[in-house]
Length: 583
Picture 1 (spheres, helix red, strand yellow):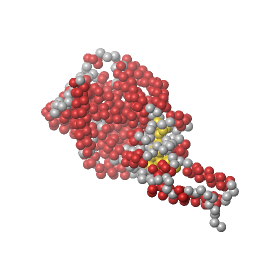
Picture 2: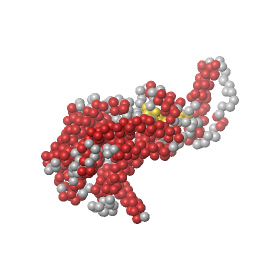
Picture 3: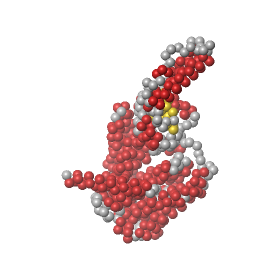
Picture 4: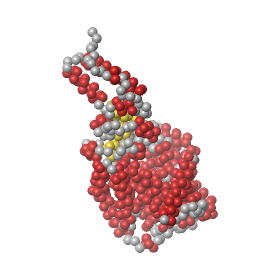
């Protein structure tokens, strides 16, 4: 009972302090990661001493890193990878290698660390903060620009590189427990066998499982299946003595091109956010503030050296890849900080006995301080970044991966809307919950994602934040005025178009912020009547006159019904007797 009370008390204190500090740091433009780290340091044993046992909490929170790698894997759609291959394999690879070696050289020259320790510290410092940089690019509307695409490519390669970096640190381990493990060649065979097994399981077990759950329509089971996939993949790798993060990453990659990608992202994201926040809280609790206080000049100097070295190296790589100097400088400053994966790799290096706990704390503080400088560096370089965006040759048209429109509902109505948009070269992301329809669409070469398009989190994962148009084309009466208000508030730049079941639905949406509401059978009914009238021998002018009369009458009647909010209004305007033509 006492242990249960302690867990509740610790959870209450951790979440309470995290809430306060993250809100404050977000308000100051410093990012959530710094808020979690400072909250952990304040609530931990070295300041207020309200919560202890950081190691146990770190063990649980490392699941957040596992889920983060799963989401990174889900981002690796083959078409997107192929389009960005030059930036990912060129910019990304060169940045990690050259920044890692340059920072390692600085640590080796100005400290007394061994070369193994310097490498175990320098390579993690080559990684930037995805959690800090991506929100900055999204909020400024630059994620889909060439500048943003290059930054994203480098961040993506950095996220991928954590797997080989973990392997490098493990290979240098001085820990006898690690030394007693299998030889390297056997570990390589284990890795290849595990990867092949996970890929086969994804194709023949996991995808059919998600298909079955999708047909049942049980969202809770989808969440359970998503978490099971991540945990099972990580557990298999852990059983073989391999990286759990690698297992989760492979699980994400094998589902990246599946119709369930956006639903999986939306379901896993809340767990990832909470556990990753707990990870940073635990890291903050474990920071040795006394060691940092004893060497403040070292922390400040190393943070400045990190920013200068990474900024200069990335600037040089950007110039070599044909970027304008202003754009290359902005890219260098944007990615000059250390990142959240640094804490993961420092913990790995510490468990491998390559660095002492005090060193992990010192360089954790270096990462934290470097992250704190990024918002100020971006404000100081705002003029350069604006000029870089408008420079000749820096703008490109819409990319196939960045859809301009999201269509929710891929039935007969949604298919026609999608075909019209694609015929105008407008990229579209399509979402539906009908597994059979998704399979039929795949047979015709159309990519439809599984998911409930009435969920804001799923719409966000499907790209609604960057879309210019969102279409709700579902059957029935599923779109309410309150829902449309919520969508408009979440994605204010997108024009909203709604398919309405009947005039009751149109009246219900009379005050909603929609660009257009279309009754689903209105135009087809008018067309059938036109054909019938022509077949009955009426002239084209008479058919057009009948249509104009009907439309004008219907428009006026609907206007009165909207104003009153009552479908029974203007019943006298319903045409019930033949309208004799004059003359």
